[in-house]
Length: 191
Ligand code: FES
Image (cartoon, rainbow, N blue to C red; front, side, top):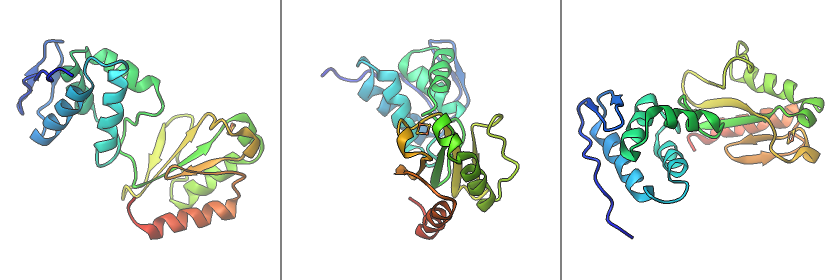
């Protein structure tokens, strides 16, 4: 494996070779993005892997505007391409995520078996009754403890309705089981 090439990023605002001007960034963030990019640069699927790892190491598991910009610099890609990839895949979060993430399936099978009620139940428990799933990608509580979002299908339609909490899939979810699972997550503290 070849030696990773430095992109020469600095803590100050800079104009990259791609013409992208990134806002000033913390030295730690710069180092982190560059190190991640260096590990993947030149490999198949490098950009997806860099986005995934940058999201994973972020304290709130999302890709900030500046992180996307720095990824563009580090990968030598225009910001427009970074954005188009990050927004195409629902896996990537563009807003801060809570310590606990509840994903409610809103596909047809789950919808016909009550997933809307489950979504409303979760939102109600977390004080987010004003959330509009058709307008917002997700809802995160002010204290950043919980995020609620939806998914088009988990691919487990026979087990509908399906809800994932902190990556654990719950099939044939009921309102009472959802309430218990959220309360257990709340008691469990940060993931
Ligand atoms: S519609 Fe919910 S798992 Fe497929």
